[in-house]
Image (cartoon, rainbow, N blue to C red):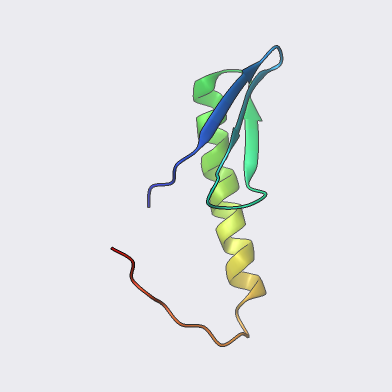
Length: 64
């Protein structure tokens, strides 16, 4: 899957977040490190969402 991420450079390094996944953010000393770190954050975010919704009635829809 591909996710759009936003980056912001600061004196401490880079902040990165996923607009489509509220609360999913990370950081790194370099842009490359921040982008690698957000991959882990996205994976953990999705695993948490799956765990929290495992006993809920769900449906899937396709958006073109």
